[in-house]
Length: 152
View (cartoon, rainbow, N blue to C red):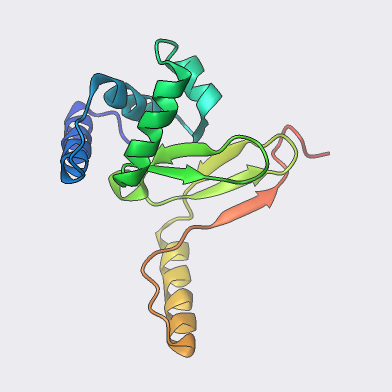
């Protein structure tokens, strides 16, 4: 979902570094490789998928660093079933999107709804919030079904 334009990447890395420093953490080369792998991925990655994309990473190191990045608000951990959790860059660092999740194979696909639908959805959520005395700040939609490979 994110752009691979160098200036955008530079800004992303600056923001990641800033968030980590705010937690008294360093933006190490290992953490940068994890962020880069998540940046170029077309969908959230499991730890095994991340290790395939970045074979020089040790599993224990990657897991620990994902936890640090998650705690700093750089990475979002998604749990959609009994298999591995998936990781993606935090939405405020990339672009707002939702997920199509295949209930058979576990594939997760990022999707954008478009400005008109998002605007209507925001209005509906604000109305619901007012009725319930709740102030919504953001939303995430996960749509479950069958992907094109698994559907009959």
